[in-house]
Length: 58
Image (cartoon, rainbow, N blue to C red):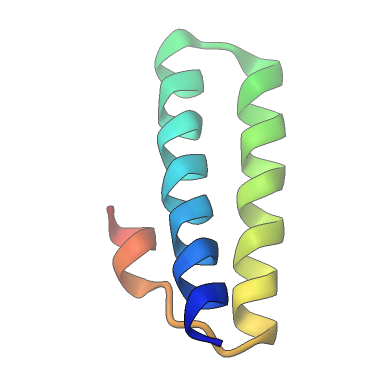
């Protein structure tokens, strides 16, 4: 599950970055989309026991 974990963490990091950009741009729709994506990725990580503490803190 190493590659799965690495890719999932990278997707979370990328989504967090996109979320911050959307928030900075005050793009309400993009914030909702990115937050939904982040919520889904974090749920998947939790279901598979993937530690994302470092990603979430970034």
